[in-house]
Image 1: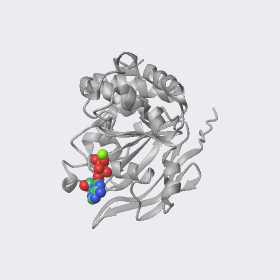
Image 2 (image 1 turned 60 degrees about the horizontal axis):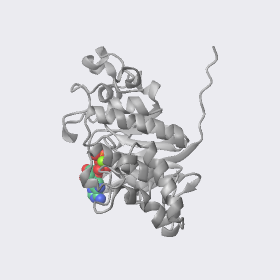
Image 3 (image 1 turned 90 degrees about the vertical axis):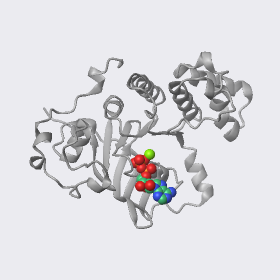
Image 4 (image 1 turned 45 degrees about the vertical axis):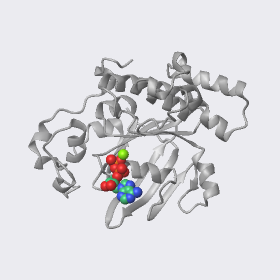
Length: 293
Ligand SMILES: Nc1ncnc2c1ncn2[C@@H]1O[C@H](COP(=O)(O)OP(=O)(O)O)[C@@H](O)[C@H]1O
Ligand SMILES: [Mg+2]
């Protein structure tokens, strides 16, 4: 059978992106393309620069070297005015949901529409309700963030990230603070909203079961470098010890207890780590997750 590689137009392209804070190089020569209309996840141990990467993509930080293309425009070095325009292409779900504590969920979700559009309250209500419905919050819109659960805050954050109909939705560790079952529910919602909106989803996380459920493509950051960027299937069957160790969550391998204990060898071979070589391939959470649809 002839297998034709799927070619998908990139919506974000990074070329040789490098970022240091003082002598600490956080991202080193990072290059990859985010396929349009798909879900891409970037994984990496804590402190590897995932949030820094995301901030570079939305122009909140500027790389020291390299190019970042968003829908065909190079954003590094852009004037603020143009960066604001580019930022409107993104809906962002920050780690803590970043809701305004003194506003109801309704007002939080309506906020970007009131701030950035001239839409009237009637139209705003329709959009808020449509998105609240999607994330299952219709009965809670009058509540304040402090009165709802962590999972509901995330869902409100997701609804708020979607109201402007962004081309790209960015998630910074959407699973943080949620138990595994709530994460599974949120993942279902991520898949559903991606399918419904057709937007490009870009997720930064270290939650492997969650990535296995949601991502089409994935990249792994380790010691400031992108170890590999490929389809989920290629990553699952990879014999690269860093990828294998990260995806199976084993304590044996090139990734150490902390950055100081990491093996510096990003070209390590699987034979060097017998415990990893014996590990089964990584299972696809879509088929074994109790909560998956
Ligand atoms: N504005 C900053 N100034 C100096 N160092 C920073 C800044 N932002 C992040 N860092 C450092 O960059 C590294 C990566 O951080 P981050 O991207 O937040 O990691 P994570 O992968 O956990 O999201 C950390 O060592 C962090 O201390
Ligand atoms: Mg982070």
